[in-house]
Image (cartoon, helix red, strand yellow):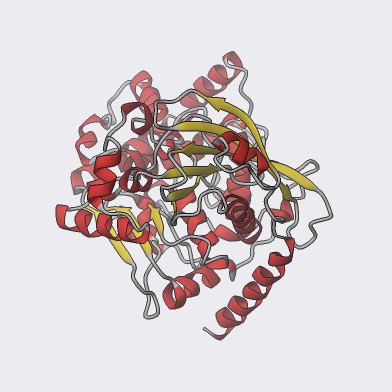
Amino acid sequence: MTRFRRALMSMTLLAGLAGAAGVGAPAAAAAGADIRDQLEAAPGVTVLEEQPVAAPYRFFVLSITQPVDHLRPGAGTFQQRFTILHRGTDRPTVLHTTGYNVPTYAFRSEPTRLVDGNQLSVEQRFFTPSRPDPADWSKLTIWQAATDHHRIVAALKPIYAKKWLSTGASKGGMTSIYHRRFYPSDVDGTIAYVAPQDVVNSEDSAYDRFFTKVGTAQCRAALDAIQVEALRRRGELVARYEAWAAANARTFTTIGSADRAFEFMVNGTTWAFWQYSLASDCAGVPPTTASSDDLWAWLDEIYGVDSNTDQGVGPYIPYYFQASYQLGYPDVSLPHLAGLQHYRGQDRAQSYIPRDLVPHFQPLAMGDVDVWVKLFGRRLLFVYGQNDPWGAEPFRLGPGTRDSLSYTAPGANHGANIAKLTSAEAATATSAVQRWADVTAAASLTTAPSYIPSLDDRDPALDRRFALR
């Protein structure tokens, strides 16, 4: 614990230094000015476009000038993309951290719906096009990204002066907690969905235990058996993979070969199945007697044959770099495949980034965040899915955490949310979110429809089906 406290103190000092690199005073906008004019007047902000969206909302795609290094703001800048779904300056605002690219279409996250608020969705630094040129990958840290978010909040709070919440799912949920760790007062509460917390990267036995208990014994056996069968048919299926890649202009430079990419795909199918499927989908797992056509189609449906190509991996290199640098990455033992694997132990985050990127793992980064949550966390809500493998290593509340909740949705996968909790838990969680935002349920439900198909039917976290694996 002593070394974690030292890390905590050192990172707090860095956060203080970053305050000197904050945004300047906002330019004054005329009283009653149109929201677009107010946004244009915010320091460093450029409105790139406004897209049509159903009233009473307006939707903007914007960028903000960010330092590449917040400790050296004069050493170069880049443009970070973000969006705003504007509801009204008299409403709360939700900072939605994606952890990846930002969708450039309008949508409402669950907290935004619950408080009938505005929503800022931010693209993570180093995800194209929000990437410095040249890219100094050592600046892709959780602190640098948290400071990006801090500067966006500082630039826009003069416009959106009511309560603020933050939220995100999966890596976006992780990112929202990292932002709170370094800038705890930027928002009034955080709702983090299905966010893993790999405190000790070398200790991943929790994932192995998860895969011995999830679902039914029959389903687990079927998934194990189809992985074994796929590797037994390696020769035939890799040849098919190579032919498919040639026909579709796909390459395997980053991972190394179609054979290696195929093995990594087979390794990950059980993880991907439980991440995005339900127990009822176990009936669709092919038997070992299935044709190679059916086996190939199932691998594509569950994992995605394009996922391990250069073209599939490329957009997620910043994630794999972060996993190799600070976040950690799960290592599942897969003992039933040991005799069939050619690359055992190599399916790790660094295998998915170019060889000229060599991150040096920082083992204290996640421990520092863990200590903050357990000793200093305030107004945090964690939601996990019972059958989601990422929940095997969750954020955990501690003796110093205050006004915070953590729930697991029964039978849910990586799409778990408040609505999937038991009715009593959902009511308690909803009440906390609305209290943090200083709104009442009655006010939220009477000022806007509780369900707007054009804004609520798309889930960006589920759109990135294979982003975390």
